[in-house]
Length: 209
Ligand SMILES: [Zn+2]
Image 1 (cartoon, rainbow, N blue to C red):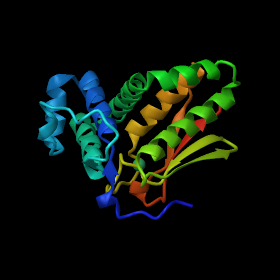
Image 2: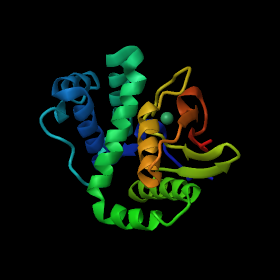
Image 3: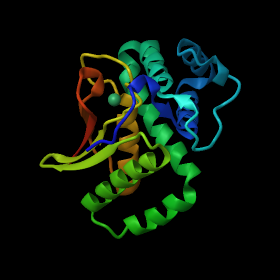
């Protein structure tokens, strides 16, 4: 069961993760686009200076959600695809920061079957996110349709309400993580979202074939 948690409005977010997201937005949207969405999200302070590259919980999680919302609103209908691209780029920045750890994992992965690789990367991702933030709670579930990554403390939609799943950036990051571990593109879908009242944002990594 999930641990005791405070209200989502009080959740805190890891500096390095926000830094990676901002770098990824800059890569996908360009510097001008990045400035627009930072201002829109009320985060002007990061226009000239990125958050520090450390694992402190220095940011309000609702700001991370506001940044996602700003990108979505900037692009309208194209927002979903752009956020997925940003999520992919964000994971790649994360891998770069942890080259030593990921290098060892990468070598071990080559010897495993595909399904084990998927489980491994999802479990490792969940573990590292929970290690840096006491409040984060994620479960990896095995279902007949494939593995599900269930985040009970999703930052993407923190405090938001929606009629359909909105954690597109998260889909992108999970897609890129699975690709990194398997060498293949798997379909990742968000089947439940906290913004719609679910207890967790649940991302299904579909089995291939
Ligand atoms: Zn979510």
